[in-house]
Image (cartoon, rainbow, N blue to C red; front, side, top):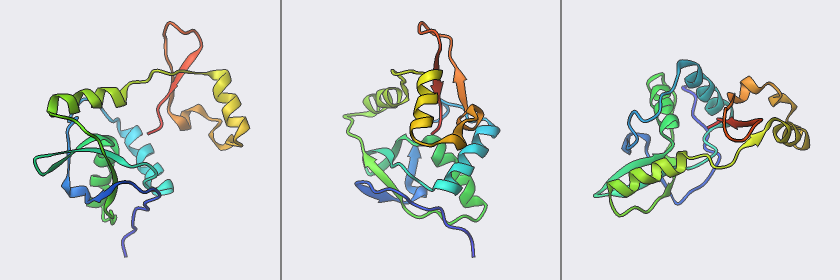
Length: 153
């Protein structure tokens, strides 16, 4: 029997993986290393957050969740069972507005400092995440000295 991906959240609707159309296309790249990290996260935690979609003319376009969509499609090809995915409905009047919302959801306005991250990890007993490489963290050179951005999606 093939393993089934766990669904660990609820949303407005559930949609089959094969019915989702990536709107973002090649906006972001997913390295093989990050592909494997995301796949491992999905195997361990399941789908913990809804995929954001925009429904237009009977089609269901992915606004947020493109990398999960890519990884899940490959996992399905490897024999994993992918149940219908929880999806949140995002309103947009047209494709242009939907594309703008992709950029909005990809924006990162807040920044963590190394100190605030260490404090958060300690307060929540997340010592297993002490290795910043497990979070795929990157120190950003920005106007805010010492700020870091964490990419863990």
